[in-house]
Length: 319
Image (cartoon, rainbow, N blue to C red; front, top):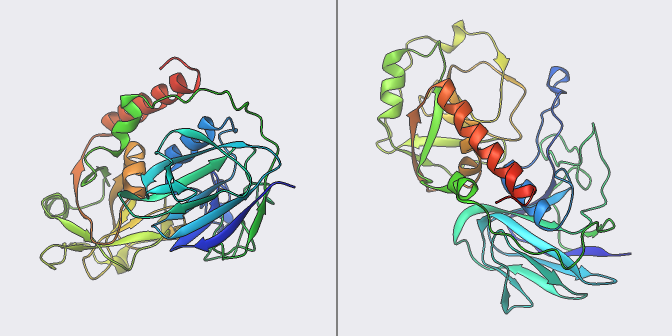
């Protein structure tokens, strides 16, 4: 049976798909790919359904070996981690190429972003939990035993639906723009956030700290000064959380919640990073400097609609 061998896991490799939304009321986080756009692009390039399981590769250092009965299409999307086939042939981001039995893919260096999403024709034949194969490491759910992949893990592959003659297609500018200007994230301000707090927030540059993971990114202001919050956290009730929620804990240093966030939280909320900028947020790396720009709900909807229309046109070959 065709399979994929993890020779080296690098910093972190997990199995992901769209996640398991709808279970938050039972305390089950949605999880799923940190960059859903990149996951969908990688799957489309190899002819997989949009929700086929992919590998989320964080940072360089990983190595994967293919055990195949016949050649298959593979593709990467999202971050550029310097992927090479057999140590010599580059695998560019957002392009599909053919790999053969016993070839090895290595991720050599971080060139842009932090997370690459790897898809292979046929997808990964993995078990679904709560309707998803996404790995939630914190709760040990999904993927392979609910854990990051290790050296020696062998993942069975499904049957490919695409033919090897499928032509590669370049992404339209609307989709590549999802990663443009990586140092700025747009957000919708929370109605309850004090205006003075929001003013200080948008005027401040932040650094992504090493205390960041798939749950969320802990940020620190360039100066180290806290963002003031007039309302004490003790007066707030816990409320549901979404990917992109910006919390302000008592130390005044924001947290940007991501895929494996908890389902509810009680810290004050500054706002929510817009869905169209989630791909950029997913590619953040410790040490990156970012700032935030407030936009209206109408602007956020327009940006997401443009991205959705561009993706639909590209999938249907109208790009």
